Length: 440
Image (cartoon, rainbow, N blue to C red; front, side):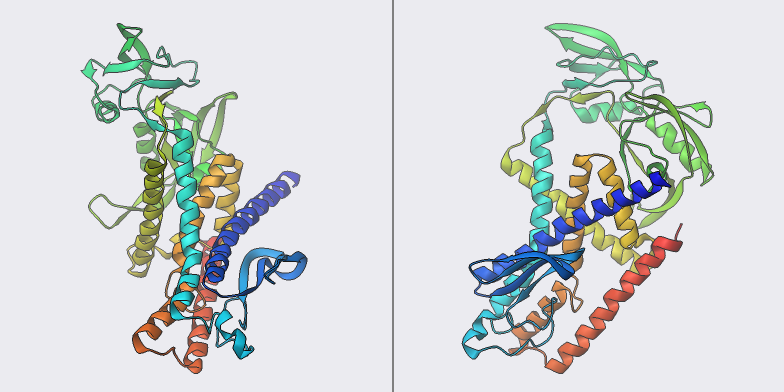
C-alpha cells in the first residue's frame, strides 16, 4: 500500500508539474502579446480557486498561484470570466482600448493566437536543445561510445573505430548497416571490419539490431511491467532472442496472450517480467491504419553509439520545427481517423491516461520527462486551435467572422455558441475519462 501511494503521489506531482509548465507558457503568450498590443491584464493565475500567494507588478497585473493546480488563466481588463468569453464587463470608456473586447481586431487575433504559438515554441526549443546536447552523427561511420552488454555478447569495438564493413559487406553510411542487417544471420555477434589507428582489423561485435529496448511507451504493456530503456530481451517464453525482429514476431504471434520475458538490465543483471500485448491501431505503410499486437517498446541502438558532432543553432531549430510539426500532423490524422471510424475511439485518452503517461515519463528520468512535456505542449497547442468556442480556436473563428462581415457575432449568438462549445469540451473530457476507466 505504501508503494502504491508513493507511486500515485509521484504520478500526480509529475502531472501537476508538467501541466503548470505548459499552462504557464501558454498563458504567458496571451499575456505578453496582449501587453505589447496595448491590452491590459488584470490577473495572471497559475491554478484556479483560492489564492495561495500573489504580488502586483508596477503595471497593475496581479500575479498569483491558486490552490487548484489544474490549469491557469489570464484575465484581461473587462473580461467576464477566465476564458475571456462573452461580451465583457462595462469599463470606463477611456479604458476601452485596453480591454480585449475594445482592442483592434489585429490585437485581439494576435493575443489569442499567441497562447498556442508559445506552446509550439516551447516544444521547438526543447527538441532543438536535445539536438544540441545529444549531437548528430558524423558523416563517417565511426563508433562514439561503447555501452555495457550482457556477458554472453562479445563487443571488441572501440570508440573512434571507423566501420568499413559488416559481415563482409562494405559500409559507407549508417543506413547501410540497417539495410545489411536483413541479410545477416541471426546471431548475438557479427564480424565487423574497422579502421583503428591506421590499421584495418576484423573484430567481433554485437548484432547491429539486438533485442535492446530504446524506449518504452507510456501506459503500454512494457511500461506496466516495469521495463526500461536499455533493457535487453534474452528470451521469450524460454526461447532465446538475439534480434529485435525476433521479439516483434513473438509478440505478434502471441495475439494478446501473456508472455514471459527474460531480461538483462545494466547494473542489475537478469530478471523476469510477464506482460500481455495490447491490440493497437497503427498507420499502415500504404495509407490508412492497421491493428497490431504491441508491448510498447522501440528498438534501441546496438551496444555502441555513433560518433557525434555538435548541431548548429539553425540546424537544431529546424529539427525542432520538424518534430513539433510531426506531433501536430499525427494528432490531426489520429483525430480524423477516429471521426471517420478508421480506428477505435479508445485511442482518445483522458486526464487519467495523460497523468499516468506523465508519471511514467518522469520515472524514466529527467530527460524523458522534459521530452514528454515538449510532446504535450505541442499537442495542447494544437487542441487549443480547434475551432470550438471557449478554446482559443473558437475565439479566432469569431474574429475571422468579424474580419469578413465587418462586425462581430451578436451577443446572443456568442453566448449560445459558447455554451455549446463548453458542453462539447466537457463531453470530450467525460468521454476521455470513460475510456481511461473502461477501455483495455
